[in-house]
Amino acid sequence: MLALMPRIWRYALVLTGRRADADDLLQSTYERALQAITSWAPGSRLDAWMFRIARNHYLNDRRSSNYRDGRLAELKLVQPDHHDGPASIESRFAFEALRRQVGRLPEEQRSALLLCSLEGLSYAEVADILGVAPGTVASRIARARDSLRASLDSSPPGGEPNKPAKQARPS
Amino acid sequence: MTQTPPNEVLGRYLDGEATPAERSALEAEIARQPAMAVELAELRALDRSFKRAYGDVLEEPLDPAIEGRIAAALARARGEQEVAAQEPPPVPRYAWSARSVGLAVAASLVALMLAGLVGYRLAERHFEAELVSAQALTAQDRQLAAAALEEALDRTLSGTAVGWHNEASGSSGEVTPIRTFRNFDDRWCREYEARTMVREQIDVRRAIACREDSGIWRTRLVSESDI
Image 1: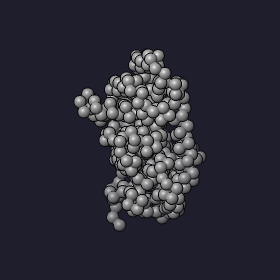
Image 2 (image 1 turned 90 degrees about the vertical axis):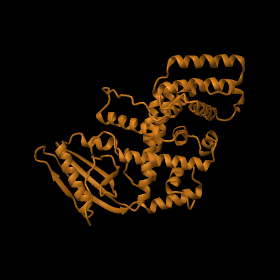
Image 3 (image 1 turned 135 degrees about the vertical axis):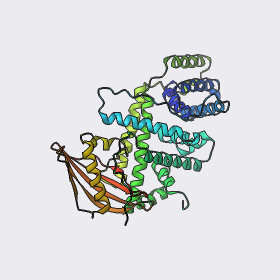
Image 4 (image 1 turned 180 degrees about the horizontal axis):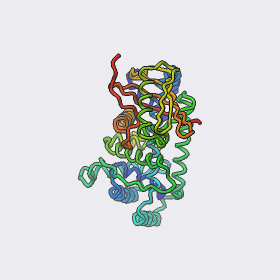
């Protein structure tokens, strides 16, 4: 259960969008899990069970508006360190940009994408956590990917145009 | 499956959720349609970026105070009841990151095999790859290169090179369209090879650009340089 902490925290960050809120959510998730540990079916996935607790807790708290919606993943300033070439710094900016875009997705899409793509849960397992049908998970993930691709297309990070930006030509 | 949007099918395929029948149908289609391969490669690239973007998050140290409180609460709970017997042993944090690196490597290997575009590595679209080559170029070089690229994509037959040369910087390059095809959403796409020579160094890369409604060619997939 302790070993899961970094992953629960990561999910908490994806949900809340703020580090301080992720810390709080991590803590309350564990509190809740320990209280309810008897309801965990031994042999089933502990991580999936914890993710569900984290999410339910988040949704409850959000209803009582403890969190602002996880709209804005905090922008962390990237300190160039000497091992990094410019490309690596750029890619970290790109990752920050991607995380910001993820933060703009509706919660159910964010959750579905994270649990499936990052945590490697099956659609059925994700569906169970989110309380929806597996087909719904598939379409949420597809929509999440579509929006991420669209947003990355429309705002290439870095600021420098690296494409020939020219207008249409006739014929 | 008939009315399922293509991206959803690709997504299911990517996530290992497609049925065997869907899988073979899709693989046949990918073999037939380069546009489909591009689409899949893009989805994989996105997925890889996503994994890497959040892989970093796992590396971040947790607040030790919180970690301590949780560990203490857990220890108390263990003392009270023996439920925890089935738990996995605590794993050091780096083990997770090693796992996610492994996943990323595996994912890109699979991508290489499946995308059907031998030699293509999934660059994160606008991300790293372009910047590496752009580093040594001056603003004027880039302008000339961009103009050559547009000329090549817009008005040049496949197999014919369009060159550029900047006397001020001494850099030069050429762009050669290789083939032309229709994309998913019926856009024209062209595969091209771009050579850049900066201070004796030759950089060659292959890429695919698709033409947007506005007429802009947007490069969607870039291979790693191979010289």
